[in-house]
Length: 447
Image (cartoon, rainbow, N blue to C red):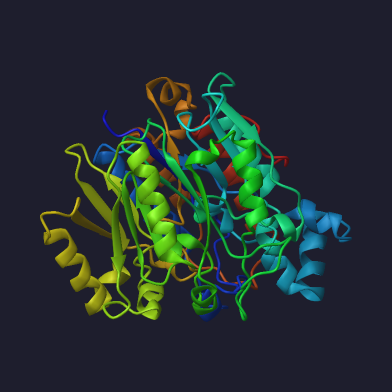
C-alpha cells in the first residue's frame, strides 16, 4: 500500500434534514424546509466510500451522533419523559428542536484538526476536536466527537487526543475544513497551513455580512497542542470578500494534496505572499510546490461556490498520479467542467482523472466530497493500531447498507421531530451501529 492518507467519512445520520441552520452557507439556507431523504443521503455517502475503497484508498467511517439530542433539551429546561419533551419543544421552540436534531456531524471535515506523526515533536498523531461554537447545532458535537475519535484511534502509543478549545468566540475552531498540508510523501515532514477568517485579539479586516468562523488564535492554539515546528507552520487569512460570497470554510475555495495546491484566484488575503511562503518552505524540505490557481476570468467565485469545485478530494493513486473527486454538480457548469477536462489533459499536471459523485442530499445542505471526510495520515504501524471495525471492507459495506435500509426513512421534514418513534428508531440504529463498527459504548443513552 503506497497511499497512507486515509479518509474517514462521516456517516449520514437518520435525522438528516433541511432546516437552514447555517448562516453563511447559501445551499443550506436556500433549501430550508424542503423534504430530505436520509436513506438516500446515507447510501450516497456509503457509495462514495465503497468506490474509493475498491480503488485501493484507505477508507474509514465515523458514526453519527444521537439526535434528537434529548439530553440537551433537558439541560435547557424541558421536563418529562422523552415523548413529553419532544411534544413540548415542538410547540414552544420548533427551531430549537430542529437544531438539536441536526445530522451535521456527517461533515467530518469539521470533526477535528489532525497532525501526522511526521510533523509533531513527540512523533505521534495529534487530534484536536473542533469546538464549532459559531453555530448552536454544531457546538454540541464536541464531547461525542471526542469519544468517537478516541474509540477509533485508541492506542496511546500512536495517538494523542486533545479536547476542544475553550468554548468562546475568541477561540472559534472549525477543524480540518480550515487546514491544509503540503509534503513530498505523506509520512515525511510537511508544511501545515492554518486558515482563519478573523483575529480575535487584534482588529483587522473581516467579512461584513457573514461570520468568520475560524480565529487566528484558535489556529495558534491547535499548532501548540500538536507540538508543531513553527518553521513549517503558516497562518493565513481567508479573503473576507469570498466569505461574504458564501465561502464559510476554506475547503469551499481550496484543496491540497501532497505538493499540490488547487484554489481560486481570490482565496486568501495577500495570496502572492502566502504562495511564496509555501514555495520557500517546500524548497527547504526538498520538494517542488505546484500551485494551480484558477483565474476568476475562467471560473467566477459564484460558479466555484455553486458547483463546489474546490470542495473536492485530491487523492494520490498507486501510479503517483492524482484523481480529483468532485460533486456531479460540477458537470452542470460548462466553464467548470471544461476547466477540469483541460486540466486533466495537460501532461504536466499531476491530476489526470476526474471522478464525479452524486451527493445531492449532502450538497443541498451545503456539503460536498471534502466536507464529508477527515484526512488522517498513517504509517503502517499507525494504520494497524486503528480500530479495525472503523475501516471499510466489502463485508462492512454490505452490513452498513442493510443497516441503513433497516432504520432510515426516505422522507423527513424539519417539523417531524416531535415523533417519539423517530427518536427510538435513531437511537436503536446507533446502538446497533456501534456493534458493527466495534466502537464500544461511545454514546450516553440507553435504548
